[in-house]
Image (tube, rainbow, N blue to C red; front, top):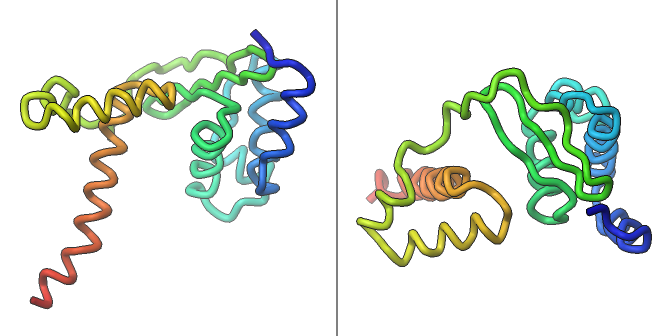
Length: 156
């Protein structure tokens, strides 16, 4: 169900960065027209971003910080639901999961650390993402933390 006009105005006003607004408008237009989600290259052109990571971070903010979209990620494409207009971008031709999805399942984690598994599952539900995506976030956060402490460990 689409959101009320007053709520849409509040949602727009919450978008802080011009690039995020332009990203949102490009994705919204694609969904409204039944087109595929714009690629990172499309979004770089539409937003004057300087690199792919800026477009990826913009989409993450629109999904996680602002709650305006929901993203299904696949190997080389994504499908995005735009809450405001209650429409999805076109379904990808290749729905293979991304290569970087963690191979450890929530069930595996439950055997090792049940409390952490509950935390990951709750986060996935709260953000409206899959448990696999939440496991990936956990793996990426762990890798980033390890990268930060490894130089310190080498000095000791």
